[in-house]
Image (tube, rainbow, N blue to C red):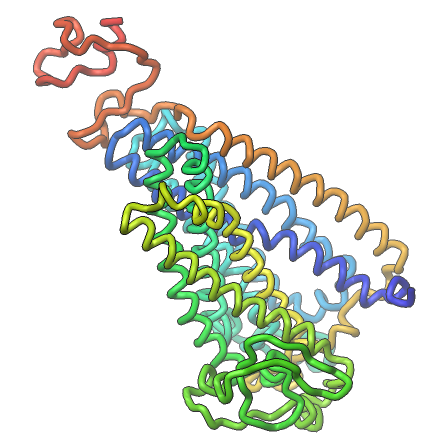
Length: 506
């Protein structure tokens, strides 16, 4: 019961629950946003009503996901000013710029062009509408970049100095702070994971329609798109994982040691799975000797300092190995690695099924792919937990190349003016509201999926063929047309009747 009176623990718990829930919708927005842009590009090129309906289906799914993501992200900013007021005072000079840029440049870009997607059909041409779809996806990636700039600075601070009174970090070089040693790797790693998730969502929806035996044209095209996007994302994900491991080795040695449960100096293995006995400081489980060394340095014999050694150094003297959640970090890291491997296996099976035209017959694979997005979500959440738990006990980590003195312990970052009962109340309320939002989102997405692609509103200029290739024409509100009727032809238009002539012929 002591934990329920510990303000520091409750503040961390509230923020963990908030961010963990919010982080479901961030990678989904990026991944589904790309699928939406690809679907709209196909519709623009083909001029097919089926492809237009498919693109409209993805626009609706993206919008529902984006809305919940925005709603759950706002509460985090309030937390900075309430539960984490002392932290905000320390990093405010640094965080102000990227958070403001995220709102002004990324969120507005995404919101404005999402408005075009929702309300611009019939008002803009096909090419402009397609460009809007890509700008929405670009805005979601740009939003992730600014947020990761802020978060990466907490992991590997740069471009700042400690104020003369020691009360806060002061920005000295914006570009050094923005593009600190971990920004690039972490952004690429996050986006590739999101792309893999988006591709698996597409495969899951396609698998559902295969199982139901309907919307098979949509299922076939969506499955092909999902396999391609997931394959690219999964392969890039492993490349970015290596780059991230190198960055952790160079900048955050305590995190790397905790990820493999390493207390003493050694050439660390890569454990396949296991359990860290924090009392005896041993890992129980099978491992591949030297493989963590290979990931981080390219050799099998590099000796790493353990937690006990690092705790004796001046830079990491605040670390207490007995208090660090080593087993939790170990488990989340290995969950991330294991589930990333499952993603690669699933996309390989899907690729074989598509290439050999067996997807429609392999019912077992359809069922597996239907639940596959959960695998990607678990991997993403586990990776985030690894990153955040791994920098404990600091909220601003004293990285190897960071400015001297620019560090902040988590236990000194929370607001002492917020009481435990207040935190408990907000945790209960947040859980209730987030549960309601999640159920509503699931119901909305389920309704979209069960209904399947519905007729999309016409795009301006489509009836006259503006921006539509010669082999396709988007028709709306036309149920039955006698294309042989003389009055259904427009003089000088060849053998293809116009949409207005068709309506006249009805």
